[in-house]
Amino acid sequence: MNTSLEGHGHISASSLNTENNRSVFELTEEQIMVRDMCRDFGEKELKEQAARIDKTHQFPMETTKKLGDLGMMGVVYPEEYGGAGMDYVSYAIAIAELSKYCASTGTIVAAHNSLCISPIYYFGTEEQKKKYLPKLCSGQHIGAFAITEPEAGSDAGGTKTTAVFKNGKWILNGTKNFITNGGVCDVHVVLAVTDKDAPKGKNTSFFIVEKGTPGFSVGKLEEKLGICASSTTEMIYDNCEIPAENILGKPGDGFKIAMHTLDGGRVGVAAQALGIAQAALDAAANYAHQRYQFGKPIAKQQAIQFMIADMATEIEAAWLLVYKTAEILNTGDRRRASKYSAMAKLYASECAHRCTHRCMQIHGGYGYIKDYVAERLYRDARITEIYEGTSEIQRLVIAGSVLADYES
Image (cartoon, rainbow, N blue to C red; front, side, top):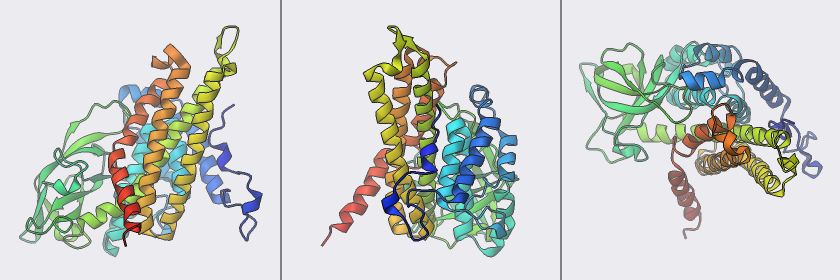
């Protein structure tokens, strides 16, 4: 039996009904529609190709176009800009379902939605929104977010890329690395130092950069452990000329925009991790029924049952954190969103790590073989504890927020 997030369509909690007689633990009709649509897409489009593109490292461009037709390349953004106009719960469900079938696809869609479209929508001018969002939300264009540098990973304040205003243009110089969608993006946003004398937090700005901009080029395409069909590259700026109107917000807004963007991005990573974790549970439970040892299915062995129980419980608990975070994002309460997005990302990513470990353990030697999905899930899960803020950074964010509440 493939449970596959089934419990998240209806969880019995009759004592917690809202005024419209819907339990707080039930999804809306729209959210169920999104789940079923993405599940159907996963079965028909992603399931068969996931192992193949993982092996060939082929970016699934046609897949992103089809997802654009379904509204999944601009889930939470208004219809006036070409988006689907849905909420963050729907977004989390979509990313989880896609990632359950193909984590590379989940990564591509999440980075596009959360990291490129988000800062343009929330901080862009009306002219910028009208120019860039329709093609991004429709999937005609792919987006990326360039913040990480060789010497500025967890410490985004260590950014070395510079932008100098000269002759009516911004001139960018520097190198970014580990940029998701970097090799295929039509549009990306990039962080650069605009005032070297200003204090950290006030010295950087974001810019919108289009493919083909003079002075911009794509560097090394990284060979990765997991999510191999996603494009992860260097981005090189060599006297890259950016029109003055392509700055996002005001000069010095870079840190503020980055933190706001990552709050939404982290719930996407949490959802991706949960999709991987659910796939691991599905694979482990199905294999446990099929694999016979000592004259009976290993599903009858208590040791296996304990691992299955732990996986199911952790996934359920992680979903509650993700749902709460998504609802907070829906309200626009960004102060609370920062703490809860860190909690959701931390717990869901470490849940995925544990679940894929148990999945491989239940498969035994077969789990170590590429013919079985357990091996790919184990590799794909690892990055969720690293990108968009390591687990250690999430703990710092959470602790800072909690301890601040106890200050006199």
